[in-house]
Image (cartoon, rainbow, N blue to C red):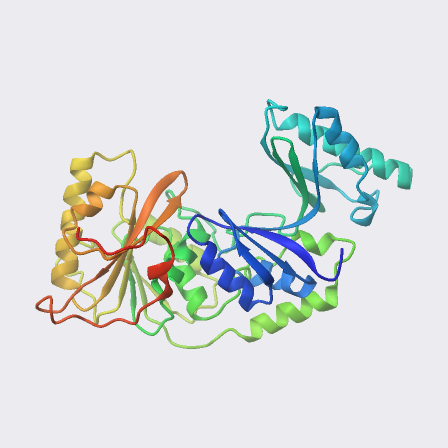
Length: 403
């Protein structure tokens, strides 16, 4: 691998600009945003940093070779020509991660098998023996992208999806993706300067990612294991430096994060997930009904909601819930700023408050919108001032509207 090499970093919809900012801050150059990816150039140090610290990265790929094929046999021949001995020994295990969109192949298994055979045959010729395939925990994971006749072969430096932070003991019921939660916090611009309230907290992912960001904790601190550590060019001394320098940047400051839910079992899951995290008791978990009159924040701050939505609920029921959310916002959270994510735009309209910022996001397979609401004190012209954030320009869909 050259001293400076290209990378492709996967992320989620609408988070590309924020991920690009992260990557630039960590040392990436020639940064270019794509659709759910950010492309850049970097060196080994920056590669290690992005894997360990970037909150909005799902996977960091290092492209090795691109080529075109006109028939299925071309895939084996082109893959066989690649110098696989530069990346694998005969005793190295490997696996193929396919992403196939081509009329030449009706199933992803066949092109994966052909590339596997090409690698094994090439290394047998060089070393005299074939390496083993280990689909569960390979030393080297190879990403195979085929788009019609175009093929790109990459090394996966992460080895797993980086939303797997390592702190989740139990996901609970329909847990939010950690990268999505980190993205929501980044969009709000919250840095810990005000209290953060997270009703409907579920298994606690939004609260955890908020604490991680505010305290500058590396995203992978709880699970610092990556595929690049098994590469032939792995620099252990450099990795230890990157690891140590990042941990030295962790801040020790007081935060007020209140995560609440009416579901006692979900709260127990959240408490177990956060039990061993270095948050200095920053998160307070409370069993609380958001709609109860007793549920009143101590002081204004940031409110982040991931309330019920989806195909399992009737729209009439959702509209009633969201109308009540609007009422609670208006009467108990005046002076705060609220952000709410939902896939039901009609239900969001039922909140009845002006929603001036909108960002399209994906929660699993559901198309959602994250909406920002300023909750005024008193009359509308007595506006509570908040610090503007870059999130207002995150997406072409972000605009001012009346709900």
